[in-house]
Length: 201
Image 1 (tube, rainbow, N blue to C red):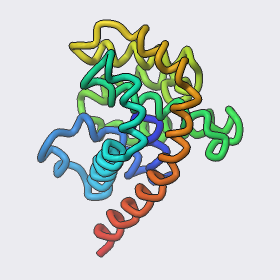
Image 2 (cartoon, rainbow, N blue to C red; image 1 turned 45 degrees about the horizontal axis):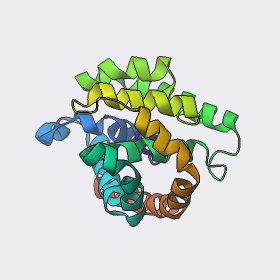
Image 3 (cartoon, helix red, strand yellow; image 1 turned 135 degrees about the vertical axis):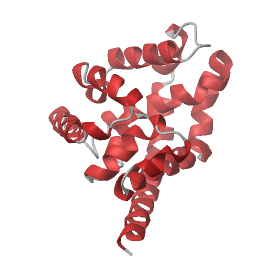
């Protein structure tokens, strides 16, 4: 999953949110440098990614991108999931609800800025200034997110094809998202509860 999903699946817990958002920038044993409550967020992020990667819906969506992008099909799929999450009226009844959520997310993260690993600390000002989390909801925002993948991945030379694939298959991909996300949400909530209980024991 991508950033908006990891923020949403932190369930309004600031420590889970921080760990969930920085996890990709915390390698190996570095996770143990953080307080246990933040470690729980790092572990939750990885559990979410494992569940997502193994889910049949993810495998089906990857098929759209794999012919053009091979091993990077999963990265495009993660970004696509955030588009449908941002537009999910069962979770965000109207755009203002998403806007409030994203602004609250940035504010909480800023309060924990001393805990940012270097990579996330460099990226976060761009995320906030360009409002990545909110802008996943638009086709233009998706094109920018795809461009971000191009800049971060050595072997993606263009993303215009990805935009065409996304736009021409949007309704079919949405059907996979609808099957997948409620299952992921239930899984993530159970896993979050398990991780928090381990800390309180």
